Length: 482
Image (tube, rainbow, N blue to C red; front, side):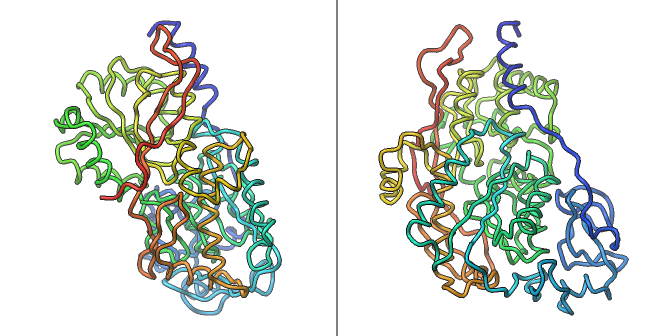
């Protein structure tokens, strides 16, 4: 690579570099036996892969997960274990709030909520993708819209956003802080498979409803409190393979030239298996969960050497953008996810790796700005004449609108238990922007459709094939369903 080409890529990586942080153990871990494994799917100890309420071979009970996503174990006859097994439940640290056992996990509390419904959102604002700074403006816009209408059954809506830095341990810590420190009624995971999995499992142990974009199914299908508001990665794989074959029939005709390039986390395991099942003979290229520049350079060389024609990335957007910036060949990229499809990724992708980025397609639970106002007249009326709104506003609007519809159905006597029961019996929940959701008590993965976004770069390319003016996504297909 020439020095002229390397400099902008190094600048991009500096801007998108992963943030690492250390965090301590939860305060109550000292009086419990602590095992490895759990939240992020790692570890070789007896608790690895177990859920809350399940027992290890030596009789210990998993009662929760610590701030690092590792299982917290307790003796079967202890108060903590009985709390998740159906016995006596300890008093909440906030006082007066108890839980019952539902489906093997600590069920939502029966406390009737007060005058404010606080929604806690965690997202990889740093560490995984070049996310914009419009989150707070979007939060203000959405909550002001509902509060101006009287809130939800007279309760004011409050939304707090916390940066999980693309780290499972930090995500769990942020979720704990939002529930215990800011009295969050429920939690939403915006993106990040490992972070969502870790936080959802902690929320189950705390009896807190948890919603997220569909990511892994591993460790989440048995959680009573968890709801996926878009298709899981596993469910999307047959869709994306069929979409590749229909949209790029020549490039996708030879499975030996079709690659999934993925970061090595156990929480991508079901998606990797689904790719292999949906596309027999297709290839996989595994990278470390946090690949180095050397790893990404080697992957770029290997893909081009093997003649890749069509490829699917399953990794942090920052790593993917660096990877395609090193490639000397130009395969057709198509994939899944949430953060891959935001305009800030498109802007950076066009500037740093334009010739390999333009025309990439990604499935998304929300449309882009080109289609959103026409799809939801309420959203169009709410934004009015403002010009500062972006795709983050669209995403938060769609997610919040669906959540508010469930809260409305719960009625004025709002409890976490009633929210979960109402959600899991919700059919045909439509926002105009997000996938229509159909939940049941046995299936909390409620979507079977997705939007398709296409990367479009602006202006003319420079001598390196990049687009200094950046770019954005358009929405060629809405509500794709096979």
